[in-house]
Length: 97
Image 1 (cartoon, rainbow, N blue to C red):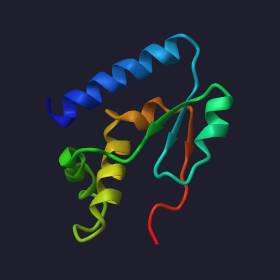
Image 2 (cartoon, rainbow, N blue to C red; image 1 turned 90 degrees about the horizontal axis):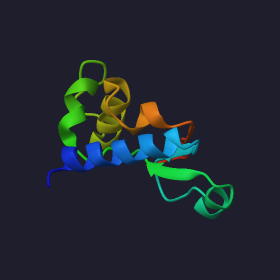
Image 3 (cartoon, rainbow, N blue to C red; image 1 turned 180 degrees about the vertical axis):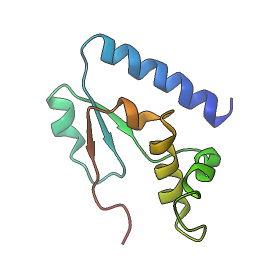
């Protein structure tokens, strides 16, 4: 199964959670205290794009030599076909040094 099919299945699952009243928190890296979010009953999704399909969206705004993680994540956010549009909260902790 390719990455986009996996992403689409996850998006469907997230939509089901939201329809049942669940709250979604989007995070980037492993520096978020997920135990606290879990204890609060929040559902956590990783916003790091897992495919390079979104890079082309980003390169219309961002330099081509920028970090692929940033371009892919930004491209996913502006494509409106990603986890970003489903998150009720986004925690943007520092992802790179």
